[in-house]
Picture (cartoon, rainbow, N blue to C red):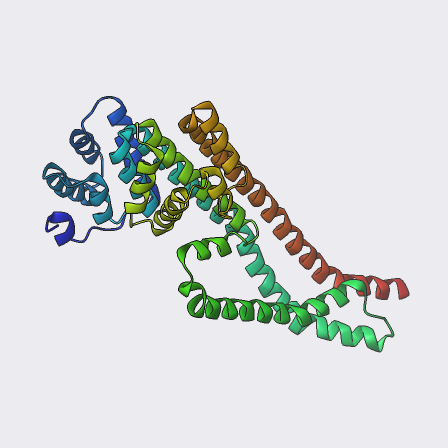
Length: 350
């Protein structure tokens, strides 16, 4: 395509901008707006640089360029482009845009919440580190020498400070070594694995792997649900997944499923062999096939995955902050008591 969107490289939209744009587009489509009018209406409310980009892409849209191609030229997130691509196939355009934008906003909200949650503890850790270096290298050695000359033994908190000073560099070194080995593994081994093998390894990561599994299951089930609701058969839906080369993971899954279906395997049996899907997913598919409401079962289960993912993230975030505060508080108290307790002993002896 030689249109405006490719001849002039647009400024990258952040995730929140992308999701908000698609959400508002979906809302206008649900009210009966044609896609071109919806985009034009939204463009009027955006900053000049975004307005120019959308007006330029409206030209391409009127030439017949698919909407997902336009979003690709605007460098939108691949998952959001995937929602649009499948929506163009099954016809539930407004619902797909709203569903995709809601998930993207949820992920962005959780990321911002995590960053905000870590800002204050990170500042405290930095200040505590500066204070620790000053006390450990300046004050504590002098007091330790004084207390030793007076026959006072090092107290528990003094031992904690010295132990932290001794083992903290070892911990940092171990972490850096782990990251270095992980980088070597990534470049020499991981990148050479097939896309399915890569995802199978990623889901083994504690916490993050569980969230990824929920994301994979949600995305596949919601798109399959939309396609089936549009009157497309399972085989036709898998073919559309396979043709979507911008998402090689889901394309490869569809290819694998199609090959095994031809050999006579049942869909739920095939899905059960994929470790990157939730273990309940095959049972949901079987139940949906048995009662003739597969698309509804998939839609319900996809929303269940999002709910579980949100609960997991919330629980993880609520755990991180107290642990950080507890660690910082214990270290600060140890620094002060390492000096003050021996001083109290001296005052008692006067």
